[in-house]
Image 1 (cartoon, rainbow, N blue to C red):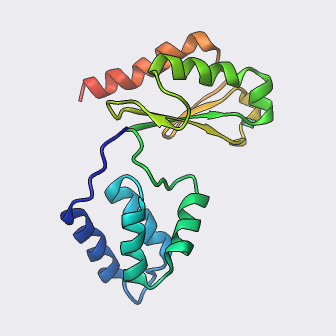
Image 2 (cartoon, protein in one colour; image 1 turned 90 degrees about the horizontal axis):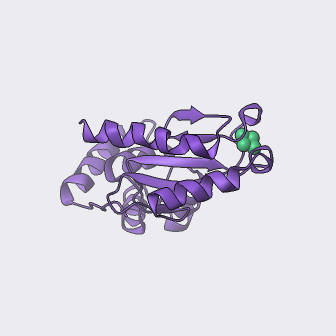
Image 3 (cartoon, helix red, strand yellow; image 1 turned 90 degrees about the vertical axis):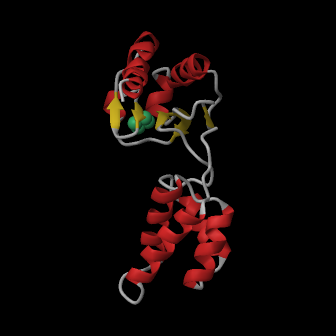
Length: 164
Ligand code: FES
């Protein structure tokens, strides 16, 4: 799993954002976006902090964090691989794709590789059924996938990381 860093400096950064935007558009969503960016996820500790700062219940914050897929409560990898398991993708072999990616990375769906590079997750239909089966890696979309393309696609991201 990717490392979780809840340092004081990160809390201070979030507090600064809240203070600077107070009284303007500082609703819950912008603060959650900021928290996700700063911490890489929004665990319960951070939800409690936001709850006190904004005077919003933890239950409400938890509801929002778990509803939107862009927020996560646990650290995710540098690259999030979303495999669509919607109907169109499923009938075109998405299960085999997710299984193959999982065995190549040695993780199960909803897990992150030990080096923190990849998180594998199953998604619902992303509206690109004409390209089924479809996967996303962060903002990149790959369609009409066959399992033999997986190693090459993944190597693009590992090479990118190694070259940094
Ligand atoms: S079912 Fe996969 S994109 Fe629609």
